[in-house]
Structure formats: structure tokens, C-alpha cells
Length: 62
Image 1 (spheres, one colour):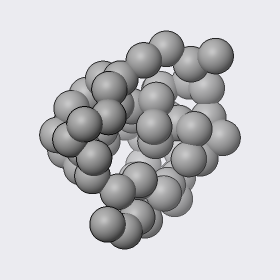
Image 2: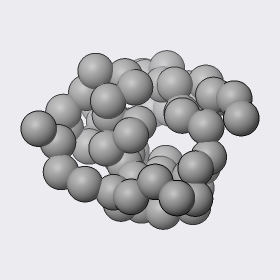
Image 3: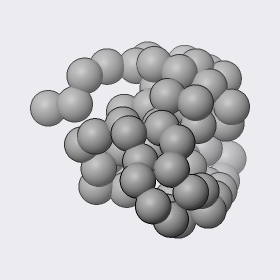
Image 4: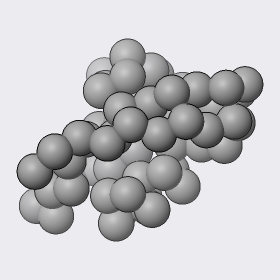
């Protein structure tokens, strides 16, 4: 499995997780991979999307 890089203007990590990880609750995995704590994005962002892992669960940022 490999990571993906995406460029996005605005948006949120929930929709990216739903699209790329097939589970919106896995937004925290994207947040951790990009040193983010807020799921709402502003401006232009280049983000690393972790590899698809259907066994991973969602969670709350610590």
C-alpha cells in the first residue's frame, strides 16, 4: 500500500477521508499524516493521504 498526495483548495478532512479512505471517521489519519488538528481546510493545501486500510478505525485527535 502506498500514500497519495493531493492538492485541494478549502474543503475538509472528512470528505477527503470518505473519498480516499472509504470512511469519513478516518479523517484523523490524514490529520496526523499532515500535522493538522483542525479538519476544516482553508486556502491551498497539499496533503499526504495515508494508504487505504479498511481495518483502521476513526477517532479523536489527541
